[in-house]
Image 1: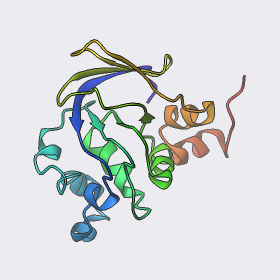
Image 2 (image 1 turned 135 degrees about the vertical axis):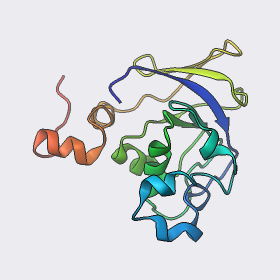
Image 3 (image 1 turned 120 degrees about the vertical axis):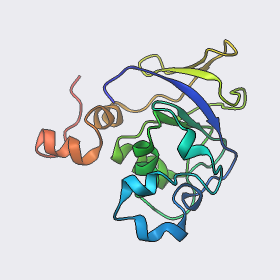
Image 4 (image 1 turned 90 degrees about the vertical axis):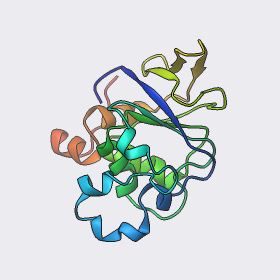
Length: 171
């Protein structure tokens, strides 16, 4: 995620999107084939989503995105499907941390004004979501520098491999 600017379309989801919506339990047998499981990401919430997602598009939720069991593969398959980030009003804590660990940006802000298929631009350094369709500029809660470093390194495993352990950002 070394890019400071992300662009894509908004795919809207509501409140309380669970890890079972993201990675359906009925597809448990695909957990060893994550690229195949990614073809089914969020299909219980929106059946057309995975097949229609373009690389860089955004999953846009409302409150409590990612609630439920600690399925690390839930944020991983969102990333594998090609989403640039998940933007929501709030996140379940374990989903948020798992997303950072797998290198998926998760941004917390007011998503109520974002429309379906709006063109969005996320400026990571400025902490802004720019809705190019409506002209709105929505600030998001900045990620701590250590999380940005982990994202830039491609996730926690890549970060540890790169630094030979857990390294805090300098500066």
